[in-house]
Length: 307
Ligand SMILES: [Zn+2]
Image (tube, rainbow, N blue to C red; front, side, top):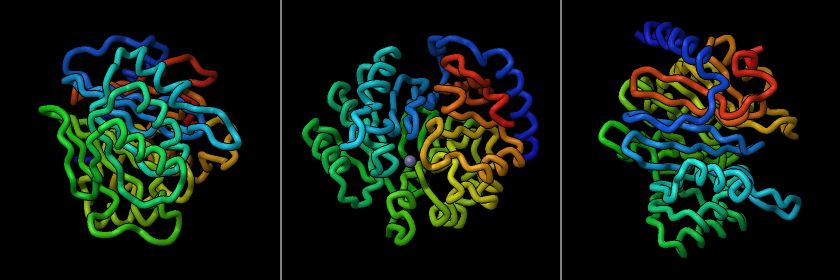
């Protein structure tokens, strides 16, 4: 059955890509879910626009630090939301408290009203995280701590299923903020999007043991910018993605994405998109068919990023 899904998915993918790889931003049609992996350099930021008009932001790239004044929230995400005509976020979701994921969130919160803020709840004593939580409180957002097994209903046919962190504990050892990333799947009829934050091997093992076939997805946001600390072969065998999206900055100091991860994705046969080469990537679906478009022309198309 999975093989069947895979073959048909690949055919749709090929047709859709040839038609839309260089298309300009179209207005969303009725019954369409849109997921945009926004190019924020080294970091993650994903905007979800549901068929019934809900807007959800997961992460917002880097914010200013003592070494850099770059703020992806003010410089990239806020203008992007305004361009989409988004005046309010129904949900702001943080994957985990590292700066390349939450650093840009305060600048978004300052200008865009947010109904509900979703946090994996892992205690992390950084200035950036504490400052963000203070702002969430100051703005009067509803605060939700999400854990494995939770369901967040968005629309009639659209919801999140949360897979990580575990309900009754947090992972210890390794990179604790990464392992306790909020990992969740957005499901819209037959199409689904898996968001992994920077989860590593412990979280993958936990999800495989506890959620098994529920991990199957159409589109996988590759964990931890394509690091070899994630995306194990066993995890790929459960997730079986048709598209893989790597949110990563060009020439980053971590050497992400790693060749071994890229090879694993290539060997698996999924179509790979990378924000460092492709810029922002938007995937739209009516719940059955799906297509990807690159929001700006880049040196190489998604097709060639497989090389
Ligand atoms: Zn990261």
